[in-house]
Image (cartoon, rainbow, N blue to C red):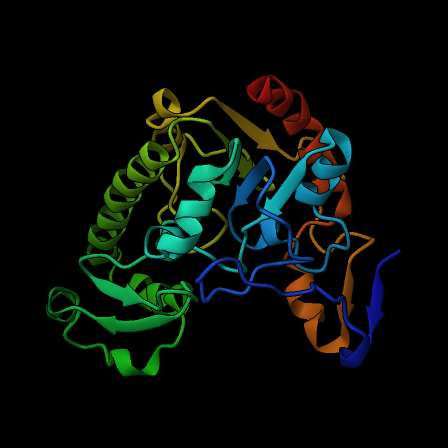
Length: 275
């Protein structure tokens, strides 16, 4: 069953750093002087509220070190702007890269925090000219800001979304080139990639559709879409560990079964890639 406990007894993620990176990743800290598989991604890869997330499950099944470089609410900027972590990912025998949303990265319209990519920093002159009626100092998070822009003008909002989608594809291609193609892309969501763009701020990975994912196929070793079962797609599923004040956040995420199915789907492809 789901376990809700006090803040003092919440799940210990054993936070750790690697190299000179300032980002705190999920531990326990792994040794990097032997072959390893690197896992890059957001909240699901990190395994928030999950005692044994899919990177840890795969380590048990592969018998090889699996280093979790995931971070809660991470975007592409976290990796592309952190040479220490990027260098460690490049050294991995293989990488699993979770497909992250397009909203959590700096672009021609706004800037995000370099490590906490979901945090809104500032609007560019371009965005202020597009939305002169908005006081951007009131926003702290990207999704909140984007939701407000959508509510004011769907037509102007579409211009912002188009920029995010174009920037996302370009940066994903750049990251995959740096990782030398030994990458499995992971779509970890409760629905398949949509065939057409979703023009609002609901769902994850935000603003990413099937055509964007397919544009990356020539640069990767494979694509895995999980979870598969109806029960695994359930948010706030049984088996999650969280404190009382984290209950609302936990209700937005999928549970251990989703991680188990993800590990099951990734395992044969990783074995093949590591041969």
